[in-house]
Length: 432
Image (cartoon, rainbow, N blue to C red; front, top):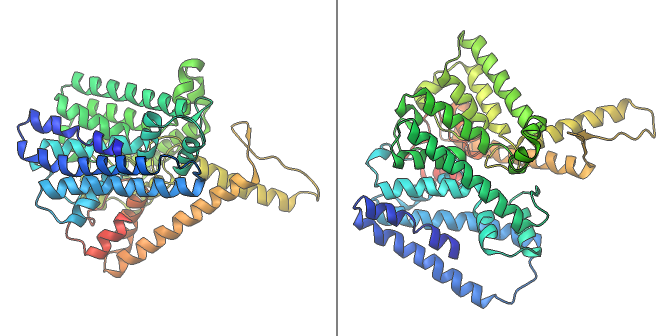
């Protein structure tokens, strides 16, 4: 709460630069409230040391909700919009879902546009993770909070150093992205916002036409590179320098991600008889769960059904674990498939035969297979509920499924049915 209160004051600098003085109080009130409450709670519970994993999971869940409420309060105070719409916008930004209710984002104050991009950038690495890395010492509490965000990967022996190194890598890629976008002709404001939303695989743009506004192949290519970097495990990024790039090429998740991009491109090539850079961009955006688009939603809705199904599968799968992506994650898909293979192998093998299952040379346990399978089942159960609710309100089942997959996978590609005029129960369903 203290960290959010401080970091969400940063857009005030943008407000002052662009003369948006009326917005300053809209930022100050929610941010100072968050900081004051955080300070009061930290003093009251200073002696509490019995943090367990279930507590960490509760803290992590409430942290995402609190972050969205602070952002929503800022938008509610500075813009003439309904609080639920403001909550949707900020939940979409923090979770990297990238969908928006704003019809015309280009008329929004620069400070609000920067707020959305900053939220995506921080949410990409993880709200809790950023503050563990900056504020919390290594130990049981840091470890359990780290696991509460469904992360197990370690770059360094202890959690705090792991997070500091991940943040360092993230900052390096962010700086490189900004520099490259400026070199190809973007303004510094556009370059910062576009980098924030690409490397975080957030995808929420400061332009109505999203990335398609720029009509520039170099901008598309830089954005695709940043999306793929964001969708690759930070552990692999750390090892790239030490292994001279071999770690990246040997990583099972990275190999599968590139293979899926190629397979999807071939399917769409066979369907459309050609594949343009816009279509390739959409494929990369789908699997990295970025949701940035160069094709407008209504044009995307007119794609062949087979091509849209391919995009749905990519959005569901997502990128690597330990990265900024949403979706099921590649490692869970690989683990579940290995589990299926193990089940069949055990059925046809002689009794008493011991079979070891490995991924990339590492042995995986039965518990890991069960956890991956249970996660996938739970994910699909929530997906089914969201889909049923959308169809109850009369939306076409196919396009409703596409957009529900996109929202739950924190993607952002849309066929155009998610907009500000949705009934309130549907807005709350999508926020959830």
